[in-house]
Image 1: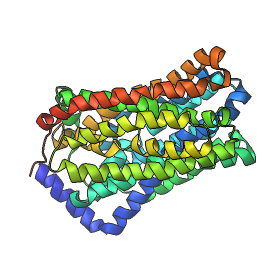
Image 2 (image 1 turned 90 degrees about the vertical axis):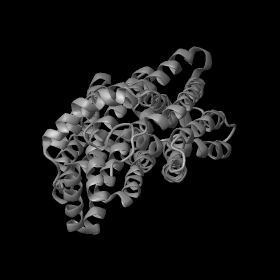
Image 3 (image 1 turned 30 degrees about the vertical axis):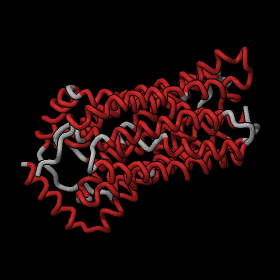
Image 4 (image 1 turned 45 degrees about the horizontal axis):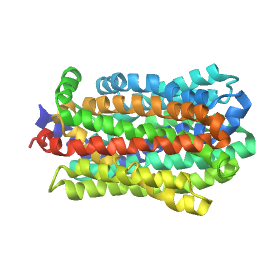
Length: 428
C-alpha cells in the first residue's frame, strides 16, 4: 500500500512537471505570508488600537494571543484530517477566505469584545492553512527536493512578520488602523479563489488509511519522551516569541520614542534579515550535522536559545537604536532557527503514515501555550509593573519573559539523549 501510494504520487507529480510544483509552492507561500502578516499587523497597530478602544495591556494581550489561540489550536488537527479525507487545496483556500474575512472585520471593531471575537475568527481560519500546505508540498516534490521546498515555504514566517510590521505601519500612517485591516483582508479574499483554481490535489491513498493514522498517531508519539520534551521546549520558545512579536512594536514606541512608521521599518529590517537567515541556517545545519548524529536536531535549537535569551534582553535594554538593532538582529534569527530541526525530528518519531497527525499534535501544544499564554502574560506583567515603572513597564515585562528561552534550552538538552532511541527511519 505504501509503495503503491509512493508510485502514484511520484507519477502524478512527474506528470504535472516542475513548473506546476513551483507554482503551487509560490501560491502556498503567498498564503503563508498572509497568514503571519495578519498576525503581526495587530502588533504594529497596537498603540493606535489601544488608544482608540481604551484597552489595557492585559486586554490587548488577550486579543493578540488567547483570542487567536483558542480555536486555532483546537481545530488544527480536525481540519488537517478533513483535508486528508477531502481536498487539501479546498481546505487551504477556504481557510484563507475565512481568516481574511475576519481580518477585514477587525477594522470595524468598536470595543474589546468585538475585536476579541473577530480575532477568534482569524484563528479559526488560520487553523486550516498550514498542515494541508505541508501535505500538498510533500505530494508535489520528491524526497530529494522536498526539504528545500519546505524551507522556502517556511520563509512565510519571517517575510509575513516583517511585512506585517512594515506594511501595517505605513497603511496605518496613511489611512488609519482600521483601513489597514480591511486592505489586508481583501487581499486574502481575492487570493483564495485563485489558489483553489490553480492548486490541484494529486491522487493519494484511500481515506481509510488516513483515518487509521488519526486514531493511532497520538498514542504512538505520546509514548516517546522526546515528543513531550520537544513540544514543551518549543512551547516555551513560542511563548516568548509570540509575546515579543505582539509587544515589541509598543516597546519601540514607548521606550525608544519611535513613531509607528519608524517602528515598522525598524522591526521589518530585523525580521526579514535575521528571520530569513535563521530559517535557512536551521534547515541547512540540521541536514548537514544530523546525518551523522541525530542529536543535532535537538542540540542546535538548544544552543540557539541559550544565545537568544541574553541578546534579546540586552537589545531591549540598549541605550540607543543602533545598539538595539545590532543586538536584536541576532535573536531575531536564532529564535526561529528551531523550526526546521524540530519539525523534522517530530516527523521522525512515528512511521511515515502517521506524520501529519503527529505534527498536528505537536503544533496543538506549541500554539496553545505559545500563542495563548505568551502575549497575555507579557501584557499582564506590564500592567502589574506599571505603578512602579510607568511607561517602561512593558520593556521590563519583555525582558523578564526572555527567561523562557533558557527553560526551552534546558528541556531540549534533556531531549538530546532520548532522540537517538526514539528516531524512526524512513522505510525503504
